[in-house]
Image 1 (cartoon, rainbow, N blue to C red):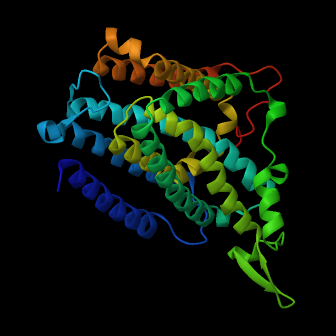
Image 2 (cartoon, one colour):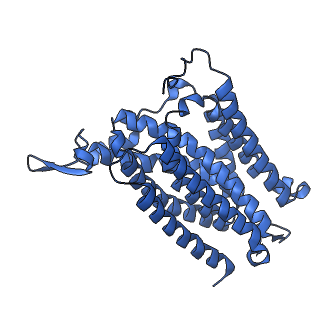
Length: 337
């Protein structure tokens, strides 16, 4: 086995054990997740990602690989891979926060009871991971076969970042008017009931899919839509499939606990979208100008700069959102909680 294959194996084993711990010890079926439990779960998944980052740092020479995408055929040290991983993870993590805005809209639109949140999120996120793995595999194969695809991704990120930065409240997502929901409604016989937590019930001898089933499909589909932004953005940070796979999966697996931790606070992050948009524009511009940038700035320095831009933009937009209220923003609705 190669060093990368060993890392993949270790990564898979750790995730399986982590899922057992998360589901068996930290989660129970049909129970409401408290803020304290959500904090523990978020700490658990973030700590796991940080331990993997440390693992990459300490692997040293064993994980040194030849960067086949560089004209200089330079050696990429594991320290650089570790920096690429933490940069990609932070990029995915910040985009996951943006996901939560849409998830909350979906849950509210279909009136999902809090007792069903955990199970619905779990199934939806596991489906999202499956589709992301397929998407990443196709994307990596395309980039390896046709390097010009990176320029397409870069242009797409520039466009997406601009649209995200200038988007207003009138552009808010309406699940019941979305193309995805209309297709679900056309294909499957649906009921507006939640079936007491079931995804499929029978009424008057007729099989019907419940609102929870619709929500799960929407969660997975919406996450895949977000992946159209996040995966090209990660490819702008690293082209190593190891980094792309692991950063995505770590971020998505932590999305469920992050949802419960932030669902009462995301309304405060009014400017997070603009912070993410600036990062996407930066990464897109970097991808478009990578050939010329690489002649003046080493890959290692590029990764450090990307990491700093991500941290400053995301942290800055969150702090700005907390301390600067938008015009017309109502008083803190959670002040009494």
